Length: 275
Length: 299
Image 1 (cartoon, rainbow over the protein chains, first blue to last red):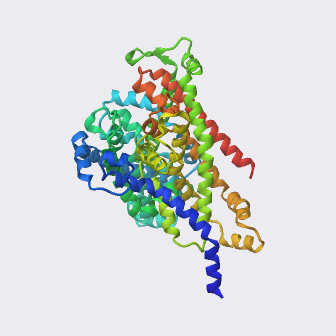
Image 2 (image 1 turned 60 degrees about the horizontal axis):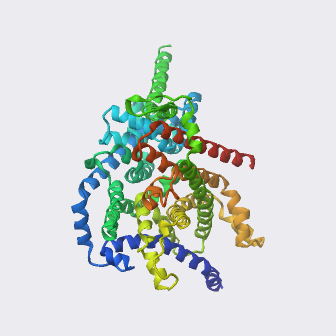
């Protein structure tokens, strides 16, 4: 009886399955094609070849001959990792501070900080560019990270999650003689590992993928990032699609790995602040 | 008495610690967002370049210039076209997918979810370049259409104003649907499954439960994703720059792209660019405010 019932339910779900398979195919195919095109010559790609070929090394060699691939990869990793570390430290302390020590004034300050979410990047681009060129912060890691290390979204995420942190632990730690900074690092930090993981994934992805800001301040070819490098590949009259997709592949591998290994944390990171 | 005094200093210490904890983040936001915003407004009232910036005569001349700037008006039109067409398609598709994936009887749920979510793992520049290549005149889409004898020769999707806009919309829907679906999925998980069971017993079909239960209960999430999408669409940059390069003839250029060009590509004009950027800020703020208000009154 139950078996018959469940097979009936599955039969009724057939249209759903078909729809989901189509949507999944459309979602995955462009990425499959990117990988396969990275292994084909530009001519094959233009002829509509879908299957992987044997020209990956050729594309790769063309790419490294034309563009400073390793330098851009190194830069992107450096910028993204430093951004993530500093952002997590600053924003988690702030979120903790806003929640655990909250009073009328801090709540007001927090709602003012939230307004920064509405400020478009292009609006602050010109003043920041002027400030940073005056302070000689162009083409360096510090210049890259400064506008990214404190975001209302991250502060909000840690603030929301600090709400679940039991106040008893803080009281007990105070009686044990720990000062406020020690309580944060020894009590809060270790218990909030999953929040930190989610925040790290989302910050790393954002920093790695950022394009407008690096394009503004990285004026020197030695400090360019991966997204900038692959965007450079379409500036000529003729596009070498094999080489282009090879570059896109290198730009996507780190974020793909993060996605597959830490998908749950990624999803939590996106929705983290709005629970 | 003594212990009381000691207690006071402890409380004072805690208070000081609280403020100290939130100072670095607050300072960074003030210096990197609020102060530049004020600066941007001041710059928007100025003309000239480099060290020779001076206040314009009349003071709002940069703003007056916008009204007569055909490219800027076109960029506003393009951005709002993306907003009005792409955002509803994407959000409805995202809710629908979340609803389908929230079915207890569905198999391979995790696999489907991963597939739909996967586009979020690509950077904006990457997917813009992938779609640029797919829809190129000698790209895969054209090869398929030619092989199926739908077209005789490759169609220049990106060289034609209407089709270039459609390609951007398709690309945006591809990239962001899974992202929004994640919000709805986490929202749906907060809805008790028994609500759906009850609706089923009452004889409500899938369509009725969707509009009668899912959409109303997801309303806060929908409003939030709507605000985020508006914010994101009004700031579109990477796609316009890399997928179509704003072309053909500025037919797909977005506001942010034009502001960037005004700063760094054409003859640099920081004053005029800041004026346009400030207008974008006002648009984002007004639309977000309207959204929040609409969300409130229906409760």
